[in-house]
Image (cartoon, rainbow, N blue to C red; front, side, top):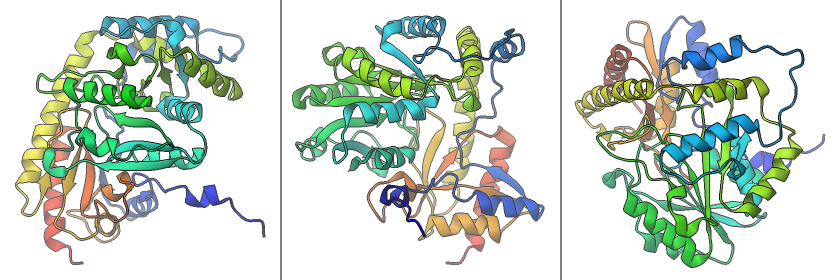
Length: 396
C-alpha cells in the first residue's frame, strides 16, 4: 500500500473542529448544542454585501486578477488610510481567506528547516501552516496570570538563531483576546529591525478593541516598512467567514512580488466573494459601534458567570471575541468529549475548544479551553449554567 507523506502525518488536527463527529452524534441523539468552540459570529453580514451579490450581473463568472480586483484593492487601501496606515493598492494581494495569506507569507519568507517565533498560545492553524511549509515553530510562552501579554523581549531574543526568519503575532489574539499595546508593538518592531527579521502580524480582529483601547498595527511602524507583513480578512470584521477573502499587505516590494507568484499559481481569489467584500467596505461605522457594544456585553456576561463557578479562572480579554479559561479538570480534551457524549442538562450541552491545540509546547494548556462568545446573551447564560453543572458531575 502506498505511504502517506511524513508531512501529511505530521499535520495537526484542528482543536476547534476535531470534536465535530461527537457533536454530530449528540445532535442525532436529540441534544441541543451551544457552540462555544468556533469563531463563527452570529452577527448579521452587512446587507450591502449581500445585496451586491444578489444584484451582480454577468454572463461569465470569470477569473479576477491574481492579486484581486483593482477596484477592491483601491478601496481597501483607502480603508487602511482612513485608520492611519500608509497602504497603497500595490501593497495588497487579495487572498482566499486570511489562511491563504498566511501560507503565502510563510512561502515568501521561509525555506524548509527555517524557524518562526510565535508567542503561545496562538491560532492553532499556525502549527498547520508551518508544518505544510516545512518550518519549525519556536514558541515563547505568554502567561495566563498576565492575561497573555507579550512575553519579555529578552525571551524572544534568546531564541533567535541563524534559522529564525520571522516573528508572528495575532493582534488582537486568537485564542486569548489579548490586544497588544503600542509599546509592545514598538518593542517587537525594534527587535525585528535589530535582527533583520520579518514581523508578521495577523490583524483580522483589528476592529474588535474594547474598553477604550486602541489597535496598533505593525504597518504603523514606518522604520520597519521592509520587515512588516500584515494579514487581514473580511471573515470577522463583516461576519463573512464563508466569503473566504483575505489579503497580505506589505510595503516590501520583494515580498509582494514573491507572494504574487504564489497568487498566480492558484490563479485568482473567488470572484463573487470579492464583489461582496468590496461592497462591505461601504458598511457604516454605526454597524461596528453596535457590534462592539454587543460583544462587550457578551464578554462581561460570560466572564461574570464563569468567575462564579468554583475552580474556574478566566484570562481577561480586551479584544477579539475569545477568552482562555482554566477548568478544574486534568484533561480538557477528555472533558470536551464527555460533554458531547455523556452529558446534558435538560437536553442541552455545550461544545468547547480544548486549548492544548493552541500551544506548540507539548503537554501545555491541558486544563484550559478557549471559549468564543459569539452567541446571543441568553444562550451564553445558559451555556455557563450547563458548564457549571457539568463540572460538578464530571469524574475523571
